[in-house]
Length: 108
Image 1 (spheres, rainbow, N blue to C red):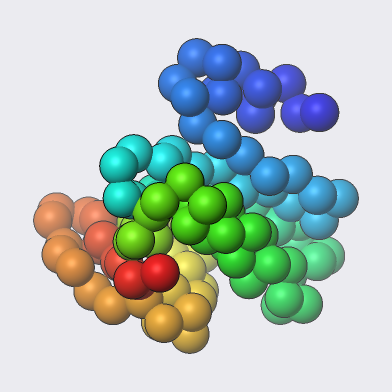
Image 2 (tube, one colour):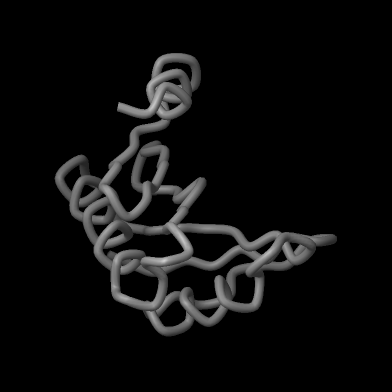
């Protein structure tokens, strides 16, 4: 188990799923499952692992009554364009944009 992920869960309540290829962290609050972080090792990217992790987080959210899957994209971070493409391919729509952050969501 990744110590940072365990710390994040204990300290902030962020749940996570970790595989050999990467990890996802997410918060479930009311009817929203909010994706905080998604990391896939560079050698494993573009092989469907991100979709698998997001889908697994979404399924956990559904089991806890979530109706919306939400995520953000910080425009000044590495991979922001790829993150936007991923959100759109996954079926998310634009909710808002403030300063340097785009908010995307998908009904589940």
